[in-house]
Length: 73
Image 1 (cartoon, rainbow, N blue to C red):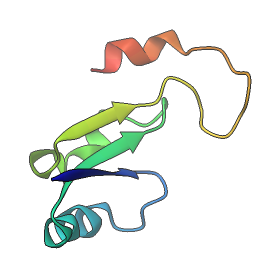
Image 2: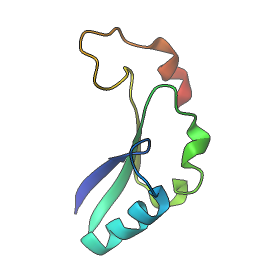
Image 3: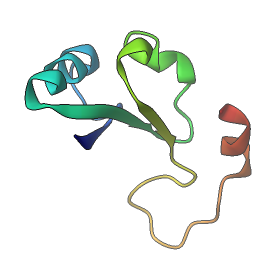
């Protein structure tokens, strides 16, 4: 079974997207930006196999690592 990851911040309906992934036979995971609180995943936490916390803000080249992301897990 392959994995599929979705960015929580760009997904219009995260629970619907995660629930629909089962029909595709993929293992769902969610990626969140450094500033996104973990509670944003409360509605899907029991349904996902992976949470990836970005350690930089996506889309900006040359940024430094954000150390506070280490304490989120």
